[in-house]
Image 1 (cartoon, rainbow, N blue to C red):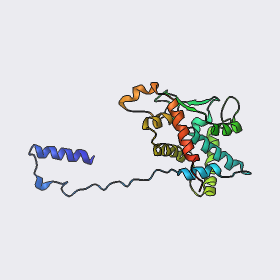
Image 2 (image 1 turned 30 degrees about the vertical axis):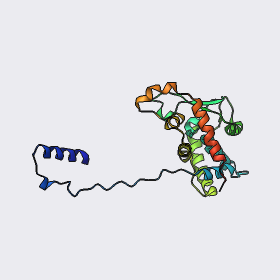
Image 3 (image 1 turned 135 degrees about the horizontal axis):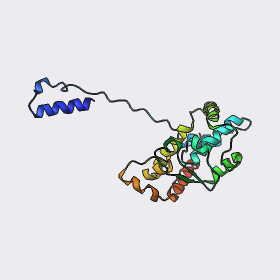
Image 4 (image 1 turned 120 degrees about the vertical axis):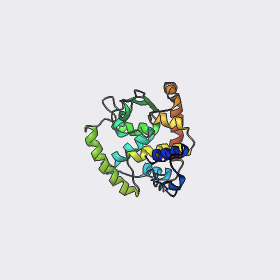
Length: 219
C-alpha cells in the first residue's frame, strides 16, 4: 500500500499539484522485515539420521524410515508417499496441487529406498499401513519429536523436504531439476515445456544428492 501512495505523491509532484517542501516521505523509511532462516539440517546431520540405531523402538524406526524414504524421493510429502503404487519409479501427482495441475512427478527408486520399501510394501503399494493417512501422521509427529530428542536436532517431513532441495542446490543442481523433482508448479514462460522434461535428469541428480550425503561423516 505504501508504494502506491508514494507513487501517487510522486505523480502529483510531476504535475506540480503539490510541493516538495511538504513531502511526507522525505524522512520516511520502511523497516525491513527480518528474514527467518528456513529450517533444514546439514548433510552431516542427515548422515547421523541414517546411522542412528532405533532397534527395539518401532515408533522411532518407522519415523526414521519415513524421513529417509522422503529424502530418497526428493523430499516427497507423506500424503503422497502414503499412497505410492509399487514400481521401479515413484509416480504421483502432488495432492497439495492436484486441483491446479495433473502433471506427474517421477522419481527412480534407488537401492537405499528399496531396503525401506521391503519393510512396508503390500497390497500393491510401496508403503502399506493399516492406519489411515491422517491418524498415522499424528503418530508420526510424536515419533518425530522423540527422534529429534534422540538426535539432538529437529527433524520432520517438512525439514527433510527443504533439506533435499538445499543439498541439491549445494551441489549445483539446476533449479529446473529441483522444481520438477519436487513437483513444484512452474509459473514461468517455459512452463509449457514441462511435459518435455527428461525425468532421467531427476534420477541422475537425486543419485548425486544421496551420494553427497553418504560421503559425509556422521556427527
